[in-house]
Length: 423
Ligand code: 9YW
Image (cartoon, rainbow, N blue to C red; front, side):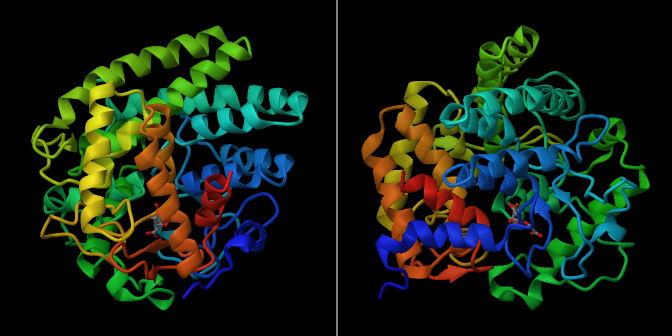
């Protein structure tokens, strides 16, 4: 039985976005996530551009107003104090004028700003605001390669699962064993007050998340030190693909706006990144895999992270193979694209990033597949995404086997993506 009338989806999505709007930034959902999250905001801006262009630019500008002096854009900005979330500002201890976390998130901003610019009705405003954001996004991209690719391999590493935005992906399980849990402060999780524990990361995972935060804090959040000092260094193909795509989009925008140097620097990163990505391809899985930088080994884990590279300009035959892989998964799941291969015994249909469907991920995959002419499977993913909304509302994520809504409700980035899927 449908919970949302299909003809009302657009209005309903706008209502969710407005409800979570705090003025200059939007919270992912009230209660569970009461602050500004980095990649959420970039997807949110794309959604807002459907009904308020001005507001959409502000969303990204607010995020970049809290960029660190070294170029990093933090994963959370704690604008207004709330004790509803753990770990809060006191745990991070980053000493920023407005409290922020000390790690980053997928670099969606370059892609988002190009999209806002392209569709802007107010061309003058778009040119002015895009031009002001360009050097800031460029500084963030530069930061990534300087601090997370110290040997110049062309690919950057994440140092904390939260950086990938896929908190408890099966991809991290093995490497996470190396992160200790001794010496962590006593803590109370707040997420369990808002969501079902069976849909969330485990206690042990939270202990390791916290150990890394305390470790980085003890190093004064000095990004020049963190990479080599981290027992967790993962080269995630999805994370890199988003950065590569944003670099390509930033280069195009820079050309249009007469910023040649920024264009050249970003194009160089794109070619080095695409070439290096090939070393992560798995013939057996028909997708890319993570590399554990500490051991140098590929991680045998077929997650959405290895499908996401279709969002970047990977070779045509790889894109085709990824389309086939998704078709295979569609035979095993009622709704696509599951965040982990259902054929893997470790797949869990309701537990956060270990199986459930996420609409932001679907959106990037659809964008990539459409660009490659893989329209049938792209349309199937779009239909599946909208079916989830009519069946289960604007949830944080969904069980691919049943379509059941999971995690937080009335979720901002889900609503934003719906506006894009309805386009
Ligand atoms: C947390 C806000 C964030 C997303 C992440 C998602 C989750 C926060 O929520 O992380 O405390 O676990 O994994 O991708 O940005 O929606």
